[in-house]
Length: 314
Length: 304
Image 1 (spheres, one colour):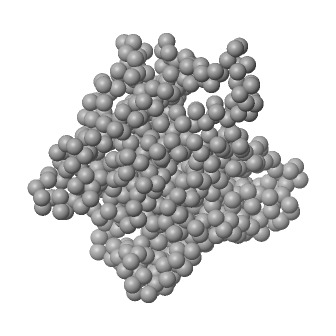
Image 2: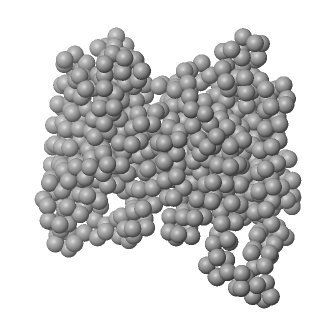
Image 3: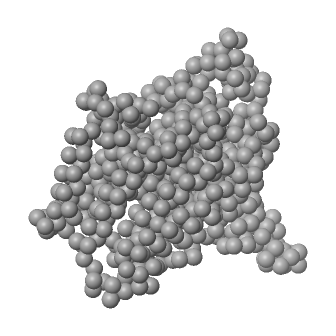
Protein backbone atom coordinates (compact mmCIF):
# COMPACT_ATOMS: atom_id res chain seq x y z
CA UNK A 1 0.00 0.00 0.00
CA UNK A 2 2.89 2.41 -0.54
CA UNK A 3 1.35 2.96 -3.94
CA UNK A 4 -0.69 6.07 -3.21
CA UNK A 5 2.33 8.07 -2.13
CA UNK A 6 5.00 6.63 -4.39
CA UNK A 7 8.76 6.39 -3.85
CA UNK A 8 9.32 10.05 -4.72
CA UNK A 9 6.69 11.03 -2.20
CA UNK A 10 8.29 8.97 0.55
CA UNK A 11 11.67 10.50 -0.19
CA UNK A 12 10.28 14.03 -0.08
CA UNK A 13 8.37 13.33 3.14
CA UNK A 14 11.52 11.99 4.82
CA UNK A 15 13.48 15.05 3.72
CA UNK A 16 10.79 17.40 5.03
CA UNK A 17 10.66 15.52 8.34
CA UNK A 18 14.43 15.70 8.69
CA UNK A 19 14.40 19.40 7.83
CA UNK A 20 11.71 20.04 10.44
CA UNK A 21 13.68 18.18 13.10
CA UNK A 22 16.94 20.00 12.34
CA UNK A 23 15.29 23.39 11.77
CA UNK A 24 15.69 24.75 15.35
CA UNK A 25 19.44 23.97 15.27
CA UNK A 26 19.99 26.43 12.44
CA UNK A 27 17.23 28.98 12.84
CA UNK A 28 17.17 30.68 16.20
CA UNK A 29 14.50 33.31 15.54
CA UNK A 30 11.45 32.36 17.53
CA UNK A 31 9.22 33.93 14.90
CA UNK A 32 9.90 31.13 12.42
CA UNK A 33 9.60 28.43 15.06
CA UNK A 34 6.25 29.91 15.98
CA UNK A 35 5.13 29.86 12.36
CA UNK A 36 5.89 26.15 12.04
CA UNK A 37 4.21 25.57 15.39
CA UNK A 38 1.05 27.24 14.09
CA UNK A 39 1.14 25.31 10.82
CA UNK A 40 1.38 22.07 12.82
CA UNK A 41 -1.43 23.10 15.14
CA UNK A 42 -3.73 23.98 12.25
CA UNK A 43 -2.74 20.79 10.41
CA UNK A 44 -3.78 18.68 13.39
CA UNK A 45 -7.05 20.58 13.84
CA UNK A 46 -7.80 20.43 10.12
CA UNK A 47 -7.01 16.74 10.00
CA UNK A 48 -9.42 16.30 12.85
CA UNK A 49 -12.07 18.02 10.70
CA UNK A 50 -10.91 16.06 7.68
CA UNK A 51 -11.48 12.66 9.33
CA UNK A 52 -15.04 13.60 10.22
CA UNK A 53 -15.95 15.84 7.30
CA UNK A 54 -13.61 14.77 4.51
CA UNK A 55 -13.59 11.01 5.02
CA UNK A 56 -16.90 10.36 6.76
CA UNK A 57 -18.76 13.23 5.08
CA UNK A 58 -20.19 14.73 8.27
CA UNK A 59 -19.86 18.51 7.93
CA UNK A 60 -19.23 19.44 11.53
CA UNK A 61 -19.28 23.01 12.76
CA UNK A 62 -18.77 21.92 16.35
CA UNK A 63 -15.01 21.65 16.29
CA UNK A 64 -14.62 24.76 18.41
CA UNK A 65 -16.12 22.79 21.30
CA UNK A 66 -13.77 19.82 20.72
CA UNK A 67 -10.84 22.22 20.56
CA UNK A 68 -11.89 24.23 23.60
CA UNK A 69 -12.53 21.22 25.83
CA UNK A 70 -9.14 19.83 24.81
CA UNK A 71 -7.45 23.13 25.58
CA UNK A 72 -8.97 23.47 29.04
CA UNK A 73 -8.46 19.80 30.01
CA UNK A 74 -4.82 19.95 28.99
CA UNK A 75 -4.29 23.28 30.72
CA UNK A 76 -5.78 22.16 34.02
CA UNK A 77 -3.94 18.83 33.92
CA UNK A 78 -0.68 20.65 33.24
CA UNK A 79 -1.19 23.17 36.03
CA UNK A 80 -2.16 20.32 38.37
CA UNK A 81 1.32 18.92 37.82
CA UNK A 82 1.07 16.48 34.92
CA UNK A 83 4.12 16.40 32.64
CA UNK A 84 3.58 18.05 29.25
CA UNK A 85 2.97 14.94 27.10
CA UNK A 86 0.57 13.51 29.69
CA UNK A 87 -1.27 16.83 29.89
CA UNK A 88 -1.54 16.88 26.13
CA UNK A 89 -2.96 13.37 26.14
CA UNK A 90 -5.45 14.50 28.78
CA UNK A 91 -6.57 17.18 26.34
CA UNK A 92 -7.34 14.57 23.71
CA UNK A 93 -9.05 12.22 26.16
CA UNK A 94 -11.09 14.98 27.79
CA UNK A 95 -12.31 16.07 24.40
CA UNK A 96 -13.32 12.52 23.46
CA UNK A 97 -15.20 12.01 26.74
CA UNK A 98 -17.17 15.24 26.55
CA UNK A 99 -17.86 14.80 22.85
CA UNK A 100 -19.15 11.26 23.30
CA UNK A 101 -21.45 12.42 26.08
CA UNK A 102 -22.86 15.44 24.28
CA UNK A 103 -22.16 14.72 20.64
CA UNK A 104 -23.68 11.28 20.14
CA UNK A 105 -27.29 12.56 20.07
CA UNK A 106 -26.34 14.91 17.20
CA UNK A 107 -25.22 11.90 15.11
CA UNK A 108 -28.90 11.17 14.57
CA UNK A 109 -28.98 14.26 12.38
CA UNK A 110 -28.23 14.08 8.69
CA UNK A 111 -26.29 16.41 6.35
CA UNK A 112 -27.28 20.06 6.88
CA UNK A 113 -29.19 19.27 10.08
CA UNK A 114 -25.95 17.85 11.43
CA UNK A 115 -23.96 20.95 10.40
CA UNK A 116 -26.30 23.40 12.06
CA UNK A 117 -26.93 21.12 15.05
CA UNK A 118 -23.21 20.91 15.81
CA UNK A 119 -22.89 24.67 15.28
CA UNK A 120 -25.59 25.18 17.89
CA UNK A 121 -23.74 22.85 20.28
CA UNK A 122 -20.51 24.81 19.78
CA UNK A 123 -22.36 28.06 20.47
CA UNK A 124 -23.89 26.68 23.65
CA UNK A 125 -20.41 25.59 24.77
CA UNK A 126 -19.01 29.06 24.03
CA UNK A 127 -21.78 30.87 25.93
CA UNK A 128 -21.53 28.50 28.89
CA UNK A 129 -17.76 28.91 29.18
CA UNK A 130 -18.03 32.68 28.82
CA UNK A 131 -20.40 32.76 31.75
CA UNK A 132 -19.14 29.95 33.97
CA UNK A 133 -15.39 30.37 33.51
CA UNK A 134 -14.82 34.08 32.99
CA UNK A 135 -11.42 35.68 33.11
CA UNK A 136 -7.90 34.81 32.12
CA UNK A 137 -6.00 31.61 32.85
CA UNK A 138 -2.41 32.53 33.82
CA UNK A 139 0.46 30.10 33.89
CA UNK A 140 1.85 29.71 37.44
CA UNK A 141 5.36 31.20 37.81
CA UNK A 142 7.04 27.85 38.46
CA UNK A 143 5.76 26.56 35.11
CA UNK A 144 6.65 29.86 33.45
CA UNK A 145 10.26 29.34 34.48
CA UNK A 146 10.46 26.13 32.48
CA UNK A 147 8.81 27.61 29.38
CA UNK A 148 10.87 27.03 26.27
CA UNK A 149 9.85 27.47 22.67
CA UNK A 150 12.09 24.63 21.45
CA UNK A 151 10.45 21.88 23.50
CA UNK A 152 7.01 23.05 22.40
CA UNK A 153 8.19 23.10 18.83
CA UNK A 154 9.27 19.47 18.97
CA UNK A 155 6.12 18.33 20.73
CA UNK A 156 3.90 20.08 18.22
CA UNK A 157 5.81 18.98 15.13
CA UNK A 158 5.97 15.43 16.50
CA UNK A 159 2.22 15.30 17.13
CA UNK A 160 1.59 16.87 13.73
CA UNK A 161 3.65 14.27 11.88
CA UNK A 162 2.05 11.47 13.87
CA UNK A 163 -1.40 12.82 12.99
CA UNK A 164 -0.57 12.87 9.28
CA UNK A 165 0.75 9.30 9.37
CA UNK A 166 -2.29 8.20 11.35
CA UNK A 167 -4.79 9.76 8.95
CA UNK A 168 -2.85 8.31 6.02
CA UNK A 169 -3.06 4.84 7.52
CA UNK A 170 -6.71 5.35 8.51
CA UNK A 171 -7.74 6.40 5.03
CA UNK A 172 -6.56 3.12 3.51
CA UNK A 173 -7.74 0.92 6.37
CA UNK A 174 -11.03 -0.94 6.54
CA UNK A 175 -12.41 1.69 8.92
CA UNK A 176 -11.42 4.48 6.54
CA UNK A 177 -13.07 2.76 3.58
CA UNK A 178 -16.25 2.29 5.62
CA UNK A 179 -16.20 6.01 6.43
CA UNK A 180 -15.73 6.94 2.78
CA UNK A 181 -18.64 4.73 1.81
CA UNK A 182 -20.83 6.52 4.37
CA UNK A 183 -19.75 9.83 2.83
CA UNK A 184 -20.60 8.68 -0.68
CA UNK A 185 -24.02 7.22 0.07
CA UNK A 186 -25.32 6.54 3.55
CA UNK A 187 -28.22 4.34 2.43
CA UNK A 188 -26.07 2.28 0.09
CA UNK A 189 -23.45 1.85 2.81
CA UNK A 190 -26.09 0.61 5.20
CA UNK A 191 -27.43 -1.74 2.53
CA UNK A 192 -24.05 -3.43 2.15
CA UNK A 193 -23.88 -4.08 5.87
CA UNK A 194 -21.88 -1.17 7.25
CA UNK A 195 -22.96 -0.16 10.74
CA UNK A 196 -23.32 3.55 10.02
CA UNK A 197 -23.84 4.66 13.58
CA UNK A 198 -20.79 2.78 14.86
CA UNK A 199 -18.48 4.20 12.21
CA UNK A 200 -19.82 7.69 12.76
CA UNK A 201 -19.07 7.36 16.47
CA UNK A 202 -15.56 6.10 15.64
CA UNK A 203 -15.00 9.00 13.24
CA UNK A 204 -16.29 11.46 15.80
CA UNK A 205 -14.08 10.03 18.55
CA UNK A 206 -10.96 10.15 16.36
CA UNK A 207 -11.87 13.65 15.28
CA UNK A 208 -12.47 14.78 18.85
CA UNK A 209 -9.18 13.23 19.97
CA UNK A 210 -7.17 15.04 17.29
CA UNK A 211 -8.99 18.33 17.92
CA UNK A 212 -8.39 17.87 21.65
CA UNK A 213 -4.67 17.40 20.98
CA UNK A 214 -4.67 20.58 18.91
CA UNK A 215 -6.48 22.35 21.74
CA UNK A 216 -3.90 21.00 24.16
CA UNK A 217 -1.12 22.42 21.99
CA UNK A 218 -2.92 25.76 22.08
CA UNK A 219 -3.02 25.52 25.88
CA UNK A 220 0.67 24.78 26.28
CA UNK A 221 1.65 27.39 23.71
CA UNK A 222 -0.02 30.46 25.20
CA UNK A 223 1.19 31.72 28.55
CA UNK A 224 -2.18 33.24 29.36
CA UNK A 225 -5.51 33.34 27.57
CA UNK A 226 -9.15 34.10 28.23
CA UNK A 227 -10.76 30.73 28.90
CA UNK A 228 -13.38 31.24 26.21
CA UNK A 229 -10.84 31.95 23.44
CA UNK A 230 -10.32 28.27 22.46
CA UNK A 231 -14.12 27.93 22.25
CA UNK A 232 -14.53 30.77 19.74
CA UNK A 233 -16.35 29.73 16.58
CA UNK A 234 -13.36 30.56 14.40
CA UNK A 235 -11.93 27.20 15.60
CA UNK A 236 -14.90 25.58 13.86
CA UNK A 237 -14.68 27.56 10.65
CA UNK A 238 -10.91 27.68 10.16
CA UNK A 239 -10.40 23.89 9.87
CA UNK A 240 -13.32 23.72 7.41
CA UNK A 241 -11.83 26.46 5.23
CA UNK A 242 -8.33 24.99 5.47
CA UNK A 243 -9.47 21.48 4.61
CA UNK A 244 -11.44 22.63 1.59
CA UNK A 245 -8.64 24.87 0.35
CA UNK A 246 -6.11 22.06 0.76
CA UNK A 247 -8.31 19.24 -0.48
CA UNK A 248 -11.06 17.56 1.48
CA UNK A 249 -10.65 13.85 2.20
CA UNK A 250 -6.97 13.80 1.26
CA UNK A 251 -3.95 13.22 3.50
CA UNK A 252 -1.83 16.13 2.29
CA UNK A 253 -4.65 18.62 1.82
CA UNK A 254 -5.08 19.85 5.39
CA UNK A 255 -1.31 20.33 5.69
CA UNK A 256 -1.08 22.32 2.45
CA UNK A 257 -4.15 24.29 3.47
CA UNK A 258 -2.67 25.11 6.88
CA UNK A 259 0.59 26.21 5.28
CA UNK A 260 -1.29 28.57 2.95
CA UNK A 261 -3.58 29.78 5.69
CA UNK A 262 -0.81 30.63 8.15
CA UNK A 263 1.44 32.21 5.51
CA UNK A 264 -1.42 34.26 4.02
CA UNK A 265 -2.52 35.38 7.45
CA UNK A 266 0.97 36.32 8.56
CA UNK A 267 1.81 38.23 5.39
CA UNK A 268 -1.50 39.92 4.71
CA UNK A 269 -3.35 40.27 8.00
CA UNK A 270 -0.92 42.86 9.33
CA UNK A 271 -0.52 44.87 6.16
CA UNK A 272 -4.03 44.65 4.76
CA UNK A 273 -6.27 43.94 7.73
CA UNK A 274 -9.85 43.20 6.65
CA UNK A 275 -8.84 42.95 3.01
CA UNK A 276 -6.99 39.70 3.71
CA UNK A 277 -10.22 38.06 4.92
CA UNK A 278 -12.04 39.31 1.83
CA UNK A 279 -9.36 37.81 -0.42
CA UNK A 280 -9.52 34.61 1.61
CA UNK A 281 -13.28 34.42 1.16
CA UNK A 282 -13.01 35.00 -2.59
CA UNK A 283 -10.31 32.33 -2.92
CA UNK A 284 -12.50 29.97 -0.93
CA UNK A 285 -15.52 30.50 -3.22
CA UNK A 286 -13.36 30.02 -6.33
CA UNK A 287 -11.95 26.79 -4.92
CA UNK A 288 -15.41 25.42 -4.06
CA UNK A 289 -16.71 26.33 -7.53
CA UNK A 290 -13.76 25.40 -9.72
CA UNK A 291 -11.38 23.13 -7.78
CA UNK A 292 -13.54 20.98 -5.55
CA UNK A 293 -10.50 18.84 -4.81
CA UNK A 294 -8.50 21.79 -3.49
CA UNK A 295 -4.76 22.40 -3.72
CA UNK A 296 -3.81 18.75 -3.50
CA UNK A 297 -6.15 18.04 -6.41
CA UNK A 298 -4.38 20.78 -8.33
CA UNK A 299 -0.99 19.18 -7.62
CA UNK A 300 -2.33 15.85 -8.84
CA UNK A 301 -3.51 17.52 -12.01
CA UNK A 302 -0.06 19.02 -12.59
CA UNK A 303 1.52 15.60 -12.83
CA UNK A 304 -1.53 13.93 -14.27
CA UNK A 305 -1.29 10.21 -14.65
CA UNK A 306 0.65 9.99 -11.40
CA UNK A 307 -0.53 7.33 -8.97
CA UNK A 308 -2.16 10.01 -6.77
CA UNK A 309 -4.75 11.14 -9.25
CA UNK A 310 -6.36 7.74 -9.34
CA UNK A 311 -6.70 7.17 -5.62
CA UNK A 312 -8.04 10.62 -4.80
CA UNK A 313 -10.82 10.27 -7.33
CA UNK A 314 -12.51 7.32 -5.69
CA UNK B 1 -47.16 58.04 38.67
CA UNK B 2 -50.83 57.08 38.66
CA UNK B 3 -50.23 54.19 36.32
CA UNK B 4 -47.32 52.90 38.35
CA UNK B 5 -49.45 52.84 41.45
CA UNK B 6 -52.06 50.83 39.58
CA UNK B 7 -49.50 48.26 38.54
CA UNK B 8 -48.32 47.98 42.10
CA UNK B 9 -51.77 47.01 43.17
CA UNK B 10 -52.17 44.83 40.11
CA UNK B 11 -49.13 42.77 40.88
CA UNK B 12 -45.65 42.82 42.29
CA UNK B 13 -42.63 44.35 40.61
CA UNK B 14 -41.78 40.82 39.56
CA UNK B 15 -44.96 40.48 37.51
CA UNK B 16 -44.30 43.82 35.86
CA UNK B 17 -40.77 42.79 34.92
CA UNK B 18 -42.08 39.47 33.67
CA UNK B 19 -44.68 41.11 31.42
CA UNK B 20 -42.13 43.61 30.16
CA UNK B 21 -39.60 40.90 29.30
CA UNK B 22 -42.34 38.80 27.74
CA UNK B 23 -43.53 41.57 25.45
CA UNK B 24 -39.98 42.42 24.38
CA UNK B 25 -39.46 38.72 23.71
CA UNK B 26 -42.51 38.60 21.46
CA UNK B 27 -41.46 41.75 19.63
CA UNK B 28 -37.99 40.37 18.93
CA UNK B 29 -39.75 37.13 18.00
CA UNK B 30 -41.61 38.92 15.21
CA UNK B 31 -38.28 40.21 13.94
CA UNK B 32 -36.85 36.66 14.08
CA UNK B 33 -39.72 35.52 11.89
CA UNK B 34 -38.89 38.26 9.39
CA UNK B 35 -35.16 37.57 9.25
CA UNK B 36 -35.79 33.89 8.57
CA UNK B 37 -38.25 34.56 5.75
CA UNK B 38 -35.87 34.83 2.79
CA UNK B 39 -33.66 32.01 4.04
CA UNK B 40 -36.63 29.70 4.47
CA UNK B 41 -38.01 30.47 1.01
CA UNK B 42 -34.70 29.73 -0.70
CA UNK B 43 -34.00 26.67 1.45
CA UNK B 44 -37.48 25.30 0.97
CA UNK B 45 -37.73 25.85 -2.77
CA UNK B 46 -34.28 24.86 -3.96
CA UNK B 47 -32.40 23.36 -0.98
CA UNK B 48 -29.88 26.18 -0.98
CA UNK B 49 -28.67 26.96 2.50
CA UNK B 50 -27.64 30.59 2.26
CA UNK B 51 -25.78 31.32 5.50
CA UNK B 52 -24.92 34.75 4.09
CA UNK B 53 -28.57 35.79 4.45
CA UNK B 54 -27.70 37.51 7.74
CA UNK B 55 -24.91 39.40 6.03
CA UNK B 56 -27.38 40.54 3.37
CA UNK B 57 -29.75 41.76 6.08
CA UNK B 58 -26.89 43.76 7.57
CA UNK B 59 -26.10 45.19 4.14
CA UNK B 60 -29.77 46.18 3.83
CA UNK B 61 -29.60 47.78 7.26
CA UNK B 62 -26.57 49.82 6.22
CA UNK B 63 -28.33 50.91 3.04
CA UNK B 64 -31.34 52.16 5.01
CA UNK B 65 -28.96 53.81 7.47
CA UNK B 66 -27.29 55.73 4.64
CA UNK B 67 -30.59 56.54 2.94
CA UNK B 68 -31.70 58.11 6.21
CA UNK B 69 -28.37 59.80 6.87
CA UNK B 70 -27.93 61.26 3.39
CA UNK B 71 -31.45 61.96 2.22
CA UNK B 72 -33.51 61.69 5.39
CA UNK B 73 -35.60 58.78 4.11
CA UNK B 74 -37.27 56.95 6.99
CA UNK B 75 -36.26 53.25 7.24
CA UNK B 76 -39.80 51.94 6.73
CA UNK B 77 -40.44 53.62 3.33
CA UNK B 78 -36.81 52.99 2.37
CA UNK B 79 -37.72 49.29 2.15
CA UNK B 80 -39.49 50.20 -1.10
CA UNK B 81 -36.16 51.39 -2.51
CA UNK B 82 -33.90 48.67 -1.10
CA UNK B 83 -36.23 45.80 -2.01
CA UNK B 84 -35.87 46.13 -5.82
CA UNK B 85 -32.15 46.83 -5.42
CA UNK B 86 -31.75 43.60 -3.46
CA UNK B 87 -33.85 41.74 -6.00
CA UNK B 88 -31.31 42.75 -8.65
CA UNK B 89 -28.45 41.79 -6.33
CA UNK B 90 -30.09 38.40 -5.85
CA UNK B 91 -30.28 37.90 -9.61
CA UNK B 92 -26.58 38.76 -9.90
CA UNK B 93 -25.56 36.43 -7.07
CA UNK B 94 -27.60 33.61 -8.56
CA UNK B 95 -26.20 34.08 -12.07
CA UNK B 96 -22.64 34.45 -10.82
CA UNK B 97 -22.36 31.87 -8.05
CA UNK B 98 -25.39 29.75 -7.35
CA UNK B 99 -26.73 28.81 -10.79
CA UNK B 100 -23.90 26.28 -11.15
CA UNK B 101 -25.31 24.25 -8.25
CA UNK B 102 -28.70 23.62 -9.90
CA UNK B 103 -27.64 20.34 -11.47
CA UNK B 104 -26.37 18.83 -8.21
CA UNK B 105 -28.20 16.31 -6.02
CA UNK B 106 -30.05 17.71 -3.02
CA UNK B 107 -27.32 16.90 -0.50
CA UNK B 108 -24.60 18.43 -2.68
CA UNK B 109 -26.77 21.50 -3.29
CA UNK B 110 -27.00 22.10 0.44
CA UNK B 111 -23.32 21.44 1.07
CA UNK B 112 -21.98 23.55 -1.79
CA UNK B 113 -24.41 26.43 -1.28
CA UNK B 114 -23.44 26.39 2.40
CA UNK B 115 -19.76 26.64 1.46
CA UNK B 116 -20.22 29.34 -1.20
CA UNK B 117 -22.43 31.47 1.01
CA UNK B 118 -19.91 30.98 3.78
CA UNK B 119 -17.36 32.61 1.47
CA UNK B 120 -19.81 35.48 0.97
CA UNK B 121 -20.20 35.66 4.73
CA UNK B 122 -16.45 36.24 4.99
CA UNK B 123 -16.44 38.86 2.23
CA UNK B 124 -19.53 41.00 2.96
CA UNK B 125 -19.07 42.03 6.62
CA UNK B 126 -15.40 42.72 6.06
CA UNK B 127 -16.20 44.85 3.03
CA UNK B 128 -18.67 46.73 5.23
CA UNK B 129 -15.97 47.23 7.87
CA UNK B 130 -13.54 48.49 5.24
CA UNK B 131 -16.06 50.88 3.73
CA UNK B 132 -17.90 52.14 6.79
CA UNK B 133 -15.74 51.17 9.83
CA UNK B 134 -16.89 48.64 12.45
CA UNK B 135 -18.63 51.34 14.55
CA UNK B 136 -22.04 50.65 16.02
CA UNK B 137 -24.62 52.77 14.17
CA UNK B 138 -28.34 53.31 14.44
CA UNK B 139 -31.00 55.34 12.71
CA UNK B 140 -32.48 57.74 15.26
CA UNK B 141 -35.87 59.00 14.16
CA UNK B 142 -38.43 61.09 16.03
CA UNK B 143 -40.19 57.90 17.14
CA UNK B 144 -37.05 56.05 18.26
CA UNK B 145 -37.36 55.25 21.94
CA UNK B 146 -40.98 56.41 22.06
CA UNK B 147 -43.30 53.98 23.83
CA UNK B 148 -46.97 53.30 24.33
CA UNK B 149 -47.48 53.30 28.07
CA UNK B 150 -50.27 50.95 29.18
CA UNK B 151 -50.49 51.32 32.93
CA UNK B 152 -46.73 51.12 33.24
CA UNK B 153 -46.48 48.37 30.64
CA UNK B 154 -44.23 49.99 28.06
CA UNK B 155 -44.37 48.96 24.40
CA UNK B 156 -42.01 50.71 21.96
CA UNK B 157 -43.51 51.90 18.68
CA UNK B 158 -40.79 50.22 16.61
CA UNK B 159 -41.54 46.90 18.30
CA UNK B 160 -45.25 47.20 17.54
CA UNK B 161 -44.45 48.21 13.97
CA UNK B 162 -42.22 45.13 13.68
CA UNK B 163 -45.06 42.85 14.72
CA UNK B 164 -47.43 44.52 12.27
CA UNK B 165 -44.87 44.36 9.46
CA UNK B 166 -44.09 40.70 10.14
CA UNK B 167 -47.76 39.76 10.01
CA UNK B 168 -48.32 41.80 6.84
CA UNK B 169 -45.25 40.52 4.98
CA UNK B 170 -45.80 36.87 5.86
CA UNK B 171 -49.47 37.16 4.89
CA UNK B 172 -48.54 38.85 1.60
CA UNK B 173 -46.01 36.13 0.82
CA UNK B 174 -48.60 33.50 1.64
CA UNK B 175 -51.08 35.11 -0.77
CA UNK B 176 -48.37 35.38 -3.43
CA UNK B 177 -47.45 31.70 -3.09
CA UNK B 178 -51.00 30.38 -3.04
CA UNK B 179 -52.96 32.79 -5.26
CA UNK B 180 -50.68 33.86 -8.12
CA UNK B 181 -49.53 31.74 -11.04
CA UNK B 182 -45.88 32.41 -10.38
CA UNK B 183 -46.24 31.73 -6.68
CA UNK B 184 -47.90 28.42 -7.48
CA UNK B 185 -45.07 27.52 -9.84
CA UNK B 186 -42.58 28.20 -7.03
CA UNK B 187 -44.47 25.80 -4.78
CA UNK B 188 -44.66 23.23 -7.55
CA UNK B 189 -40.90 23.40 -8.10
CA UNK B 190 -40.24 23.07 -4.39
CA UNK B 191 -42.40 19.94 -4.21
CA UNK B 192 -40.94 18.17 -7.22
CA UNK B 193 -38.85 20.10 -9.69
CA UNK B 194 -38.75 17.29 -12.24
CA UNK B 195 -42.51 16.89 -12.37
CA UNK B 196 -42.89 20.68 -12.43
CA UNK B 197 -40.57 20.77 -15.43
CA UNK B 198 -42.72 18.22 -17.28
CA UNK B 199 -45.77 20.39 -16.60
CA UNK B 200 -44.16 23.19 -18.57
CA UNK B 201 -42.82 25.28 -15.69
CA UNK B 202 -39.52 26.96 -16.46
CA UNK B 203 -37.55 25.51 -13.54
CA UNK B 204 -34.28 27.47 -13.89
CA UNK B 205 -36.19 30.74 -14.13
CA UNK B 206 -38.31 29.83 -11.11
CA UNK B 207 -35.13 29.06 -9.18
CA UNK B 208 -33.58 32.35 -10.19
CA UNK B 209 -36.60 34.44 -9.24
CA UNK B 210 -37.13 32.62 -5.93
CA UNK B 211 -33.50 33.17 -5.03
CA UNK B 212 -33.72 36.86 -5.93
CA UNK B 213 -36.97 37.13 -3.97
CA UNK B 214 -35.25 35.51 -0.99
CA UNK B 215 -32.45 38.07 -1.15
CA UNK B 216 -34.94 40.92 -1.62
CA UNK B 217 -36.81 39.80 1.51
CA UNK B 218 -33.59 40.52 3.46
CA UNK B 219 -34.26 44.24 2.95
CA UNK B 220 -37.34 44.21 5.21
CA UNK B 221 -35.74 43.08 8.49
CA UNK B 222 -32.75 45.18 7.44
CA UNK B 223 -34.74 48.37 7.95
CA UNK B 224 -35.81 47.29 11.45
CA UNK B 225 -32.32 46.21 12.40
CA UNK B 226 -31.10 49.67 11.28
CA UNK B 227 -33.48 51.23 13.82
CA UNK B 228 -32.21 48.96 16.59
CA UNK B 229 -28.52 49.46 15.91
CA UNK B 230 -26.16 47.72 13.53
CA UNK B 231 -22.58 46.58 13.47
CA UNK B 232 -20.86 44.23 11.02
CA UNK B 233 -20.58 41.47 13.65
CA UNK B 234 -24.34 40.97 13.50
CA UNK B 235 -23.78 39.22 10.17
CA UNK B 236 -22.45 36.28 12.18
CA UNK B 237 -25.05 36.49 14.95
CA UNK B 238 -28.12 36.56 12.71
CA UNK B 239 -27.60 33.27 10.82
CA UNK B 240 -28.09 31.23 13.96
CA UNK B 241 -31.39 32.98 14.74
CA UNK B 242 -32.47 32.39 11.15
CA UNK B 243 -31.58 28.72 11.24
CA UNK B 244 -33.26 28.21 14.59
CA UNK B 245 -36.48 29.78 13.32
CA UNK B 246 -36.40 27.86 10.03
CA UNK B 247 -35.97 24.55 11.84
CA UNK B 248 -38.61 25.39 14.46
CA UNK B 249 -41.08 26.27 11.72
CA UNK B 250 -40.18 23.23 9.66
CA UNK B 251 -38.04 23.51 6.53
CA UNK B 252 -39.93 25.24 3.75
CA UNK B 253 -42.87 26.29 5.91
CA UNK B 254 -43.53 30.00 5.36
CA UNK B 255 -46.69 30.14 7.45
CA UNK B 256 -44.98 28.58 10.44
CA UNK B 257 -42.26 31.24 10.53
CA UNK B 258 -44.17 33.83 12.52
CA UNK B 259 -45.16 31.28 15.16
CA UNK B 260 -41.62 29.89 15.27
CA UNK B 261 -40.14 33.38 15.60
CA UNK B 262 -42.54 34.22 18.42
CA UNK B 263 -41.79 30.90 20.13
CA UNK B 264 -38.06 31.61 20.00
CA UNK B 265 -38.59 35.16 21.26
CA UNK B 266 -40.79 33.82 24.07
CA UNK B 267 -38.33 31.11 25.13
CA UNK B 268 -35.46 33.59 25.06
CA UNK B 269 -37.48 35.97 27.20
CA UNK B 270 -38.13 33.17 29.70
CA UNK B 271 -34.40 32.43 29.67
CA UNK B 272 -33.66 36.08 30.44
CA UNK B 273 -36.21 36.12 33.23
CA UNK B 274 -35.25 32.88 34.94
CA UNK B 275 -31.54 32.43 34.14
CA UNK B 276 -30.31 35.93 33.35
CA UNK B 277 -29.59 37.83 30.15
CA UNK B 278 -26.30 36.01 29.57
CA UNK B 279 -28.15 32.78 28.80
CA UNK B 280 -30.62 34.28 26.32
CA UNK B 281 -28.80 32.79 23.34
CA UNK B 282 -28.06 29.47 25.02
CA UNK B 283 -31.72 28.81 25.85
CA UNK B 284 -32.74 29.45 22.25
CA UNK B 285 -30.01 27.13 20.99
CA UNK B 286 -31.04 24.42 23.40
CA UNK B 287 -34.63 24.62 22.14
CA UNK B 288 -33.19 24.34 18.66
CA UNK B 289 -31.17 21.21 19.41
CA UNK B 290 -34.18 19.59 21.08
CA UNK B 291 -36.27 20.31 17.99
CA UNK B 292 -33.53 19.01 15.70
CA UNK B 293 -33.34 15.73 17.55
CA UNK B 294 -36.97 15.12 18.51
CA UNK B 295 -39.07 17.06 16.03
CA UNK B 296 -37.00 17.77 12.90
CA UNK B 297 -40.15 18.35 10.83
CA UNK B 298 -40.79 21.51 12.87
CA UNK B 299 -43.86 22.95 14.55
CA UNK B 300 -46.37 22.43 11.77
CA UNK B 301 -44.52 20.17 9.34
CA UNK B 302 -45.47 16.61 8.60
CA UNK B 303 -42.97 13.80 9.03
CA UNK B 304 -41.50 12.59 5.75
